Image (cartoon, rainbow, N blue to C red; front, top):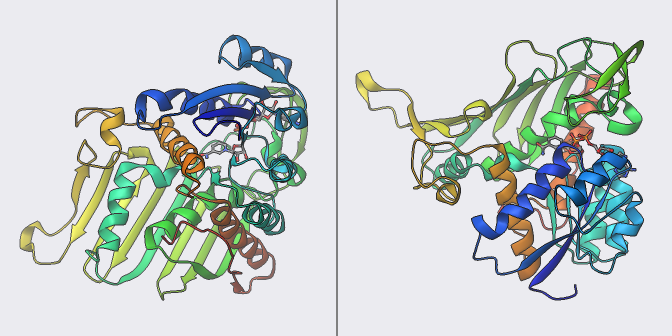
Length: 399
Ligand SMILES: NC(=O)c1ccc[n+]([C@@H]2O[C@H](COP(=O)([O-])OP(=O)(O)OC[C@H]3O[C@@H](n4cnc5c(N)ncnc54)[C@H](O)[C@@H]3O)[C@@H](O)[C@H]2O)c1
């Protein structure tokens, strides 16, 4: 790295996540002033000319290129940010590792456990600080719930319920984007949404899923081919020609943890009703907590069973008493949003790079989720319980 207090950033792919990561870096100076580093948006890479133009003219990158190798080999790029469609993650991450550059990569880290193992072990061998886009960890209400669990306020943890039910693919006339192709996405909702839930529940319990059984299904098996790409799930223009959906819309999983707890987990991308209902509930012998992303500033908590007629949940709203909240909203009753989680993720990544410490979700955590994903897909194929391979390296979900 050129100068420890000056970090040159290179962002690969300027879609939904690339734009969000860019905004997160830009917000660091104001929201995390204690990070005394000059964060420079050096280079952006995208194959779409319009995105390259926006990168320099609107978002403030010094240059924009169409080949990620050029970005990674740019001597002014100190850290690499990977926000491409899933199938490119492995080759770009391996190139960043080869160049010895720390990287922040979106989930899923690879399209298979094998790819994710490669990335995590490669980063570990070079001692690189990494970050994986498991943003739901950073929500103040989630941090608070994790603390209650660690302090034993819920007693012995017995079970968790996790569901990530979304409607982004519920319209059969929605575009056949890269997300529905095995070659460019890998699995479907298992990688796209369930991976978040797997990481979140492991993070809350500080425990590892060791065994799963699962089923998956596809409810919309054809979609119109796109004529023009959009950003994320929006802005696509479709043709009249249909193409096949190659991966699953739905999955249901039963899981066991190393410490003895169990979980049910479910995910859908085609529900009509819930928009992004990402819920985690954790139950213990003395209490329970519930958190829902659609209402991310609240956490429901029930501690003990001696409240008589008032037994039930307290619905607490995150405010300046909760970690990091006041950086974004100085008063209770106002809400943090999705973008703010990415600012916290960027802060953990950048401060980790400066201190040479792994603070945020690591490549080893990405690999851990990938091993669960692979076991889920294998179980859905043969109907059997599958062991989840343990990973090595600097996991943070268990710290
Ligand atoms: N953490 C989260 O909550 C979250 C949310 C959405 C997406 N994601 C992840 O982020 C990643 C990107 O998803 P998205 O929704 O931003 O995608 P997107 O479709 O909005 O953007 C993808 C971008 O990649 C560009 N691209 C394609 N081929 C390229 C190449 N060879 N070199 C450089 N750029 C190329 C496209 O032009 C496009 O701009 C995925 O892995 C996805 O799973 C994570």
